[in-house]
Length: 365
Image 1: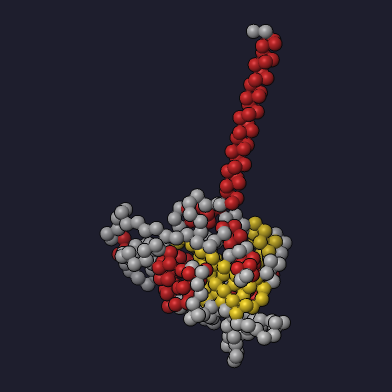
Image 2: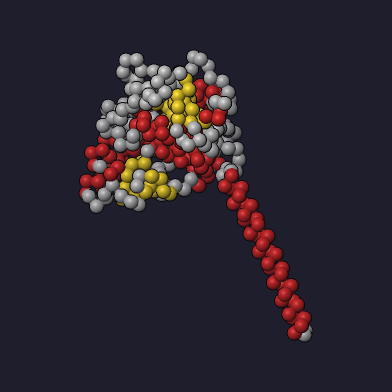
C-alpha cells in the first residue's frame, strides 16, 4: 500500500473516531441534563415530612419519646402513602427483638412474596426534641472546636442520642409496614461551613426512593470546614432536600397548631393561617388580616435548643416556598395533620382546617 493511501486511511480513521467521541459526549450531556432536571428513575417525590422534635418527644423529659403521637403519626403516614390504605393486611417490618421482651415478633409468619404494596414517594426528616439537644448545648458542639475534649465528647454523645431516636422512629414506621431506612447526615458525608450547608450528596436518598424505601433523616452533629463541627438542623435538611428533590409539597408537623403572632401560650395569640413569600424571600401575612402591617411575629427559643426553634422553621419554610413549593405547618397527630399530609390543601383549604400555609406570593394573585 502506498504512503498516500495510508495517509488517507489514517485521516478517515481519525474522522471516524472524532464522530464517535462527539456522539458519546452528546449522549453524556443528554444524560446529565436529564439527571439534573429529574433525579428519579420513576415517579417524582410527593412529600417531604418534618417530624418536629417537640411533637414526637417529651421535650422537657430527657430522651423520652411521645409514644402516642409517634404511633398516630406513623399510622397517618401509612394511610396517606398507600394508594389503597384500607386494602387489608399490614406487613410489619420490625423483626427485631425489643428490649424487655423474650420473643421475636410473629409478623413474619405467613409472609409471602405475593404480598406487595405500592407506596407514594415520601421522605421523612425528624428533629431531636429531648434527644441530642441537651448533650449539644452542655458541650457547645454547635459552636465548634473539636480540639476541646468536652466538645469532642459532646459530639459523640449527641450522635449516640440522635441516632437512637432515629432507630425508634424507623421502628415505629416499620411496624406500620412502611419500608423506612434510617440515614444520618454525618454518615452520608454531609458537611457545613460556618454552620451553612456546604456539601450534601443526595444520591443515596434518591437510590433509596427509587428502590421503594422511605428515607428517614434527622438533625445531626456534623463536621464543619470552618469551625470543626456544628449541629445541622432538621429544618435546614428539609430545605436542602426540597431544593434537590422538588417535592409536590412539604409538611412540618409540630407541637402547636401552626405559626402564631406570638408564643401560643400567651393570651390573645393569633394563628396565622396563610403566609405569602415574595420573590426576594421576604414574607407577609395574608390571613388573617393583620391590622399593623409592620408588626413582627414574636417567637421564643428554648434555652437548650441549639437549632433555632420556630425562628429557623419560619425562615426555612419561606425559602422552600420561594422554590414554588407549598409548605404546611400543622399540629402533629391531629385530623388537621392528616389533611395536610394528604396533599388536598393544594387546591382546597377548608375553613375548619387549622394550621399555617406558607406559599409563593404568585399563587395568591
